[in-house]
Length: 240
Image 1 (cartoon, rainbow, N blue to C red):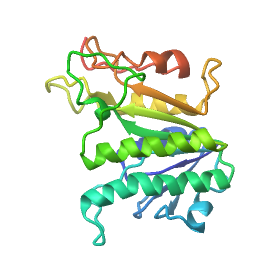
Image 2: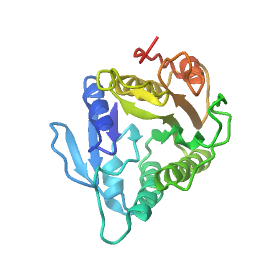
Image 3: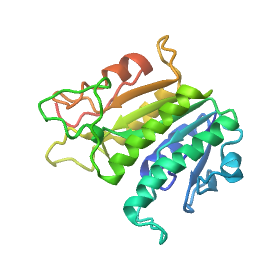
Image 4: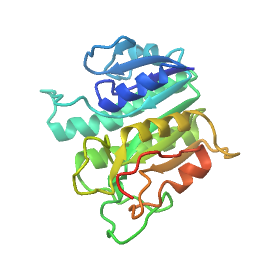
């Protein structure tokens, strides 16, 4: 498959590209330049031909919807920049994807959408998000709405993956356990599962899955829907 991965400056994009490039043709993109041995196209994800050129020929898109670390734009304050990138640029990317007949996109969202719920509640994909006014969380929530509308009205299938804080198990060894942790290699596996169409007969244009580590007291049912529907099987446990 030809796969476009956005947010190329992020550690997650690097991990995804490194793994997926073993079996697929990868094109990376971001709004800043990066160093990579893979194909890279710098793009602002504007509503213009450059975004169409970016997605042309792609079978799938992984849209991480992440600004580069320490990125700034003198024309917008940081809060407005975050919301603008997570909403307008997501819209522009999907608009171009539909025009160029891309069949599937996977959108990276956040489990922070449920932080307002009490800690003793166990939520799943059927619960209504309660986004805060934090620009990142609000932007991800609005980005989900944008994706959902494209899936509902256009010829593109979109899978949304919600996840928590991305870590490596060796980097948090000895630290107090945080149920929000998701091992980056398990998350790469989840994105690969979402691309793999292993949906057990499920035929939907819009799907949402919670992705988390296998833990005995997780805030969310340990990815039950993702396990049974797309074949997600986490390998890393932060504690027994």
